[in-house]
Image: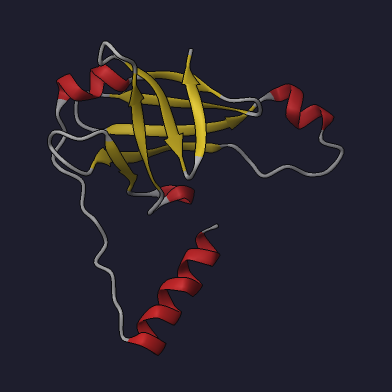
Length: 128
């Protein structure tokens, strides 16, 4: 995933002269962080969003039953990595460190405005 992004970025810059600036998240906001903190699941993985009062982090764990049934070596879980919102009032975020650095996604809301899901690189996770 990171390799693919690096190759695409290099090709766009060297062959077309297009350089995309890395998006920077807005500063940490404890109220917004508390709104999204929690565990999210899909059929194969758990995604944990945590806050420590200074930063927001995202960790990914392959479910043990998936790992056990795989029959082949599965990539390691990804430890907590810093992430942040891309706008002061939006639900888009970016991972700023670790194995998912540069990945973007967004939080999904229900009709009442409550956070109910997260999308990570096109993979949806439901809030548990």
